[in-house]
Amino acid sequence: MTTIAGRYALDPVHIGKGGMGEVWGATDTRLRRRVAVKFVRFGDDPELVRRFVRESQLTARMGHPGVPVLYDADKVAGGPFDGRLYLVMELVEGVSVDDLVAEQDPLPVGWAAAIAAQVCAVLSHAHGRSLVHRDLKPSNLMVDVHGAVKVLDFGLAVALDADERSRLTSTGQALGTLAYMAPEQFRGRSGPASDLYALGCVLYQMLSGRSPFEATDRVSFMHAHIYEDAVPVGRLRDDIPPEMDALVRRLLAKAPEARPASADEVFDALHPYTTGLRELPGAVRAGRSPFRMYADVAGRALASRSGAVRGPAASAREPSRTKQPADSFSLGDLARARRSAERLMRDSRFEEAARTLRRTAARAESVLGGDHSEVIALRGELADVLFNAGDYPAAASAFHALAEGAARRDGTGSETALRLRFQEANSRALGGEIDRALAQLKDLISDEARFFGKDDDRVLEHRRQLGLLLHGAGRAAAAVRTLEDLAADLERLRGPDDRTLQNVREALTRIGRP
Image (cartoon, rainbow, N blue to C red; front, top):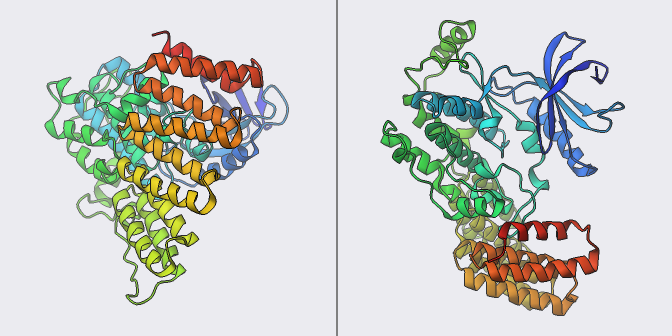
């Protein structure tokens, strides 16, 4: 028997295994209770380890009954798991929503609403504390015999946040599970609205028995989430209320600001359908239980839905009203505007954040001048907000203006000018201007090769992204030619074991021969 930290005796076999590690049932020999031990696989990145420890501490203080209690987090010293980071948490006895849907195929409307509403309660609590899950999916939701839902893997998802990025044209692993990722997550961005999109995918699956998008590879999933509309769930079942069908459509909106404003709003929309719940054989038992007795009284006595105090999530929805003097402007005003925009973005109110930054940038430019570093930085933040909001044409225009300004100030070969040109091309691609995006990316590659040499890492990376963009645009033959040429150069420069070369070959395998 393997024992961790001198007290957690692992069961003979693990409960589950995934790409980031595995989960074991265990006994805490000191307190004589059953626990779950999750081993996490990060490699040797010290920054990931630091974030893991910090975010685990934050998650341990969540204190919501819908999140398993986190008891311990540390690094194994000695034994078969030597050097591995681990979490010790409450062992949840129940069935995953994944298995529940497979058994019920699909779930009754009332149960789908009840499960999703409980997830909303957890998200409301987490989002009010600036914590985002980023990987909601049916296998991360457990339903116990009382019908209560536990949301798993909160700490792990938060800990990995900014360290695994993806763009439209990248094949690197993005945080999240492909079938449930919001469009913005494929660009390395996520927020509360991303969790709501994932919840929409889960609700769709509970109601229909299938995911909103079916695909076999990353590129196909990415294209579906960004460009395609799911078949309305109301067409797949006759008993779906029109209001429920409309809610699922809003949750699956491509632009974050088009989704419901908060988890509280989704909860209120789902609550009327959470009545008349019946036993789910093999999963949820009917009848009286101490848990239901407690939950019933707490729900009646302590919370009136029509007049409940919403807490941090509601207060965050109130727009910031920072009074600006009419006859003066200072760097302090800039800082306040930035903080206001950040608060709005955390609540997925991107349009308001963009208006705040646009208005402040105009005032700052009139006082400080267009070439002032603070004005340029503010306009860069505005471009990022527009991109995050899904307003790709406006984002492309903003990046174009910034790139021209950087080239004028620092030269056409400056890192900043070239980076902004790529961001413009990426925005054009996401906005549907494929031909223009391809032309801009080709011009960028040509200029980078002229400035840095054709074997420069930046040139090689953008050639890879060009090939993937060609594939995404349906130009398989051109994509294959581009990626085959790149593969030959990568093998010549870096050898046959290079990771990027392996990614390119995997992409060629997925694309196949036209």
